[in-house]
Length: 355
Image (cartoon, rainbow, N blue to C red; front, side, top):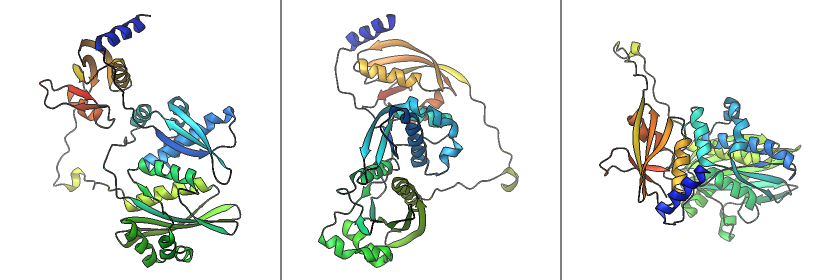
């Protein structure tokens, strides 16, 4: 009751109603046998496993971080079913972004950062089944292309699918795709103004989908490989991650040791200390804003003893204890797109609520 009363007082104090922009959910799509609710927990777990692969680009991530999978159900914000053209039922699971980021941080998995998109990736994929060959496009494969676009957006890679007009079909005929003719593929890429292109042929043999793939970048072949899977959706998801990795290989920093750097002795880092500080949050214009900030701070493992110290029009001051001290604040808030530092403020610990 006291908590409800406090929220009402805060609501009356702020008194201004605005529409709050919500962060997009993390989504993943997996096949599911039916709409039976007893299958949902397993479906959410498999969807979260797919999400880990999408975020890390590592196909072995679900095995490496299998202790996280049982927590998937608690992070579900929404879900829906979609039926594919081949009548296969798919589960689209949306996970609450802040909860996912906290879970990733707890397992020392780098949290995805908002970043500028990479160049669009043009896809030209032929799907051969029952002696009929079709090019993957947004009209006839709406579920598959929608799923791939969402997956690619989590890797900051916009996807392009062919419009399949007369010029498209003549420029890159099915035979050219199957034989991986580089000149034909690059002519289509140039037509779309795409620096990167994924070309593939998928055929079903003995109930297993076989894929042949080529990736191009800036008019040059980057990689060529084959893969297979009993599920078409899983094959497409895996292939997209592989293509993005080939186009954006991870850069590993060179490792140095004290013995190889002029006998220099490494200086031990000081241990993190707890510090109690005040944080001012601006652009808090209504109860929804306050709830968003409060829930966000309460969910951060590095913060404890969170208390409201002061409220003014559009501003709330919190007193918190932070692991690592005030120097750790900026790093703590950097990746979540919830609070942004206000360098012009007289108080170094002032942040603005992002809307």
